[in-house]
Image 1 (cartoon, rainbow, N blue to C red):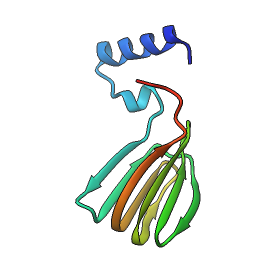
Image 2: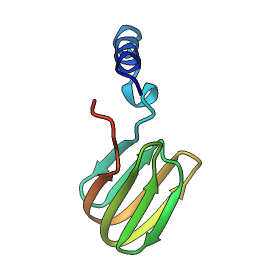
Image 3: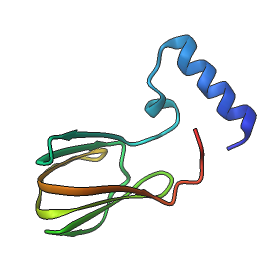
Length: 97
């Protein structure tokens, strides 16, 4: 994404009061304690095991480490995970916002 395009999207976000995750196609991650995790704006499950979940994003991957992980619900762009969440890592993103 060009620098001008990023600036235009940022200005649009501020001027129209739109969330940046919508304009920049970024994931929205909501962690409740260390037991529940909601991820919006994903592109699918790459790998799932009781100790790890890997989600594809528009740019990169989101890696969730834990124990006893269970996918409670999965929709086209939203995933709800329960278990003991130990680590969340955003991998392979190239853009600096």
